[in-house]
Image (cartoon, rainbow, N blue to C red; front, side, top):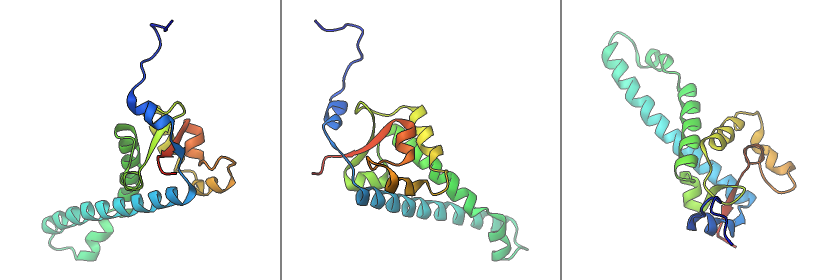
Length: 155
């Protein structure tokens, strides 16, 4: 007899429950692709801001305007927003999409906002990306602390 109060299962959750954990090199590739993607997007945004500022402040030189725009802060903020929103809303980032991997919760379903924010904030821990080398199950701290995993359908 089925429990009428049990949560419904989606076909997506069932599909990813049967998948394998993504490997070390796949995850490293995901990270590099995501960083390059955000770097390009952030650079384009900063360039637009700089052009607007330069037009508004014609007595400033290009390098003085460059000093006004906090590129490092914008890049960091964009990277955090990118991970939080993409992983929660779509379950993938550009890097994960290219490699056929996705972020799921421990049960194989979509992650919630709490898990997405924990994953994203944990990425701020210094040298957190190296934690995968010291974990028995090859998961980073942002996976373990948020109760998520990255899975793939590739054997």
